[in-house]
Image (cartoon, rainbow, N blue to C red; front, side):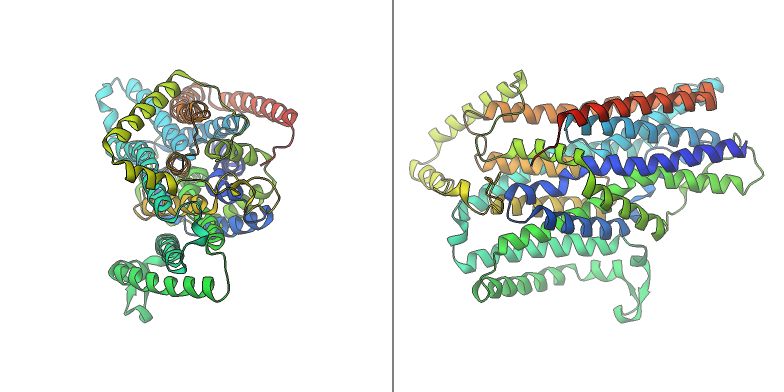
Length: 535
């Protein structure tokens, strides 16, 4: 019997590599779209910066791995034979769903997919165990970590509204102060913006990234025998003050003495940092389950208990992921980043919806989009009535495009989707939100956050004109609808796979794998017929 489980572990590891490839193709939009859309950095340099961020971020992801082991269900309530079916079903479902969305060019959330796959698989397996024991469905709370699962789901949903709102507010205030002619503003003003941006990135990305490493809990004599975590927590306010002053002085020197384009630097550093935050937060979505499956197999194989009697209490213990696993995963992600054509397809969707220019709209108008646009128009009319006329004129002047806007700052002669100010804010805001979530071990959806921040800044920047608003808003609604579809399909499909494998055992595994392979090959053929995606 051990040979059969070893075969399943081999399948899970193979699926983990495939899932990394498919997942990065989907999630690349999170950290590539701002730099690509602003067109101030060459595509090659963008990829180098993103690759460095992903590689370093992967090594700081260890602390998030416990979510796959005990974040959704109570592992001690399941036996090894149950757990291995759950983990295998999750990996199969994840590849299937993410590949479908990549082929459609729609950004979806790897966090939502993994959470609802684990939930669907655990619920169905719990029901099977309860029915076999002639128990009551009320007992399902013994199997599912209801409180933690609820917190995760609510946190993910709230992140949509928080990201959109914060993105919209900060973009509106920044544009009001800096306008579209922001580069001609005083060195003082641009230095302050640089200071705030760099301080946010360094304090919330690099420091939080360090806190996610296995070494963060070790004491060091140079830190007065404090751990890195304790030292950072006790000096966080001091870090902020020193960073603000340091980056303000450095930004001013760079702008005044060396004529450096501070916004271009922010976009470059922001791309690196957001890629780092993505890898630190999202790597668990791809390798958390396979590592948990491998550790479960190792625990069971060392015992003399049968698979159907070996309780998985070991999964409740503290997680310490081997750095080698993280390094290999980071390497696979970097290689995928360079060679995935589906990643470009997903990036293009986000850029089209946030484009400042008039383009051929990708999405058709729908009823919800029309209703939201009508509501927005009514609200705009109401504000024009109650706000002073001089104030409205001042706002309109701040949001007036430069005459040469469409031709400026492009490295390839093609119109940028948006300017450097919006690109900088997209990166900084998203990076801060994701890093805060990672530091508190909350599986925040990086896709939801980056996408909704970009949509919020687009709205505030008046990128959605009276002609394009219906199509853009309808597109956003379609993408959000796809997110709910992700959750529902992940729960149902994964639960169904658990049922089939539990019923047919190894035969069921082979049948399902063949079915999934056929679907993925068919999707790949259809995608290849579309030709190369230009962004």
